Image (cartoon, rainbow, N blue to C red; front, top):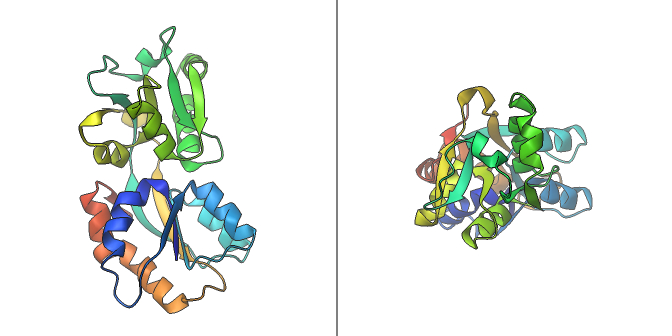
Length: 220
């Protein structure tokens, strides 16, 4: 049983089918929600998070093995195909409708890092145009595809997975956050050996290949 951040849905679903030794059951959601479930007694074998802080916190609490960093990503502005939005400054326009992740989920935390780095109070103006905060990145993507928002902050891989429906507007490198993913084996996992194999495969193996094909970068 693998609990993983929703941004990894496509890649882990692909590689999970070919995992040797066991059938892989996947549960996707916001990394903070998945961590909360573990704290409440839910026992997946593996947690794969869209950041490093959540696994590190669980490790400090004795609920997760030493986390392993396994992938990186990029934050982008996602817009529906054909949009005239080209840069962060465009998000300040009056009447702009934006969607972002809630503060507790990694995509929301990364987004707030970006907004905090913008000069001249630009981030506060952009926050004023936010009309919805979603519990995971797939919620943001869904709102954009439905036409319920003009733009949102998501991972580059989510735009790739959306095909022609969305376009990615890159962020300047000076405001780009460090987006690193980490995973570990949950304490009292029912399949600890297989869980360790799965985590190792995120760095080198079938899942590492699937993540690379989906557009994720390699962890240091």
